[in-house]
Image 1: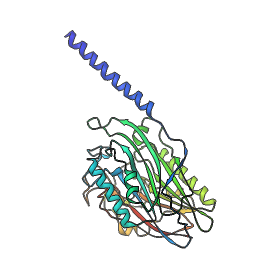
Image 2: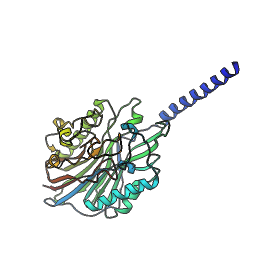
Image 3: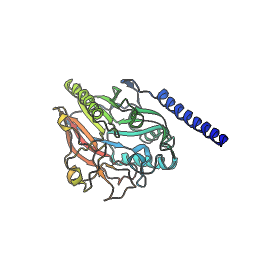
Length: 355
């Protein structure tokens, strides 16, 4: 019995040492990028934007190519943590690029696009997208480079480097990354880093067109963090508009854009951290969210990942879209319905003019 007790204590000591070592590793490898970072533009285009000309934008959270309709994600109550295979990731990214070609936007905004990650089978998705969409200039801004996350224990999600990719057929003057406020407690390891990128183009009237690509926190339970993120975004875009610029924000806000979503999409209203109402009352007076026709069409932009997608049964809502300065006229907006074939999101398409 003494020998068994001795071995048991040794085993407990080893387990304790592993846990302490892992905690040290998490804190030692965790880092945030600087609040402001200059970004490089690749494959620059020369097109000069003009007022009174119609342009098209598409925003698409691609779910790092890992969420086909059959997939469920553990953080939403599902079962899985990483993509099925490299092949499945490449198939999803191929679907993303074919969808982009079909929509044919002048500007495309992608969120949750990995350059490397265990969860996405180490497929460089930015390279795949830009390789197949060669008629665009591109700007990539990293959101996070997470340490190896050993959860769920049976199949860890691992390490991931991911971010925001903006494609444009217009000229690029400069581009930058701006950090968003995030939690400073242990939840920073699960909700990860957040930022928005800004791609700036010259307009023929001497003004500038700013393309803001954003993906806000999804799993934080601290509403003060979400409020702080909105405050930073709203302050930035208001300052740029006051300089005389055109400002278009595209992305995933992880907040419900439409009122009475449950009635529109005929679903229940589960209490999720990413379905709080968008704080439209705090939006600067010089900005608006185009939603015309979205309620009538009732095509969702996101599904819950608690189970494989089942039309009419899976919870769906609208959390993706645009914020426009008042010197941009929205002509038409719609959700391009892919039936969530390539991601847990559908792309949202906007036709607009610069006044």
